[in-house]
Image 1 (cartoon, rainbow, N blue to C red):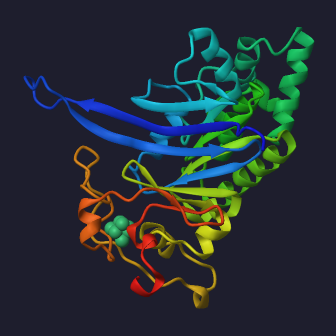
Image 2 (cartoon, rainbow, N blue to C red):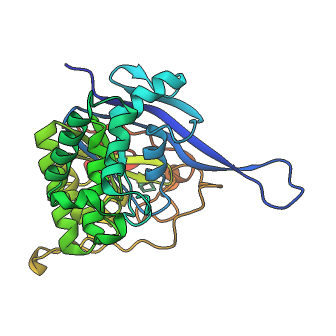
Length: 329
Ligand code: SF4
């Protein structure tokens, strides 16, 4: 079996918070608290969950936007969580990002040509001005924008067009993995579909791996290969798309899916309304973190944390119910 492009092993990221002027000892936000997964070359893995579940923190940890608290992030067999500045530079070329907000992620003072030329120059990917020009023309073609777009500035484009520029900027570095952090969430429905289709086409064309971070399960269903469902800093279910959308096992996954609108009302899933809000990641509940909202919680759930275990067929679930015989569920 070939080495996965990305391996994340028991990743933790805890942020200190100090409230009050004189409070010396910080509290901790357990934003990501022991997350493991792999992404193969050319694969899309989606990280899904409600706002605040830690999915964007995982993406930022992989991009090395901050140091992690514990665990390992391994790219192509090499640990990137403890790279030297020189090693980081090469990693940054291989792992790129498309952010949510196409309005604030592009420098309004720069022309598109300069935005796209920056990574090409920084990573030494063009040997001459002519090669740079050819790469800029190819990039703008790849994201289906007209050539005169190169001489315009971001404010002259619509949201969807700006996101195409953001994608072209990521592609300019010739990456192997793109972290798409809520990359289509700010767009209108029809534009969303166009950008998702474009990402899929580019994935095929360039063999890219995508880590697609999203709270929008309808979009995820359209484009992913596998799904990791996060709740309060942990992965609670990880499985191929078909299993997640047709036979979810974790109660939280079932609740998320029951809220996704379906085009055919006859095929609507049984609604599963969750009580209360997501607890604070500063003081997560003991035992199963989902027990305060889970309609199936029993005594063991309040004291013992369930491990993420294989249930066969490439599906992993963190729920004590999975350890019970079918008759007891
Ligand atoms: Fe619900 Fe218990 Fe399973 Fe957690 S372990 S999801 S509380 S049944």
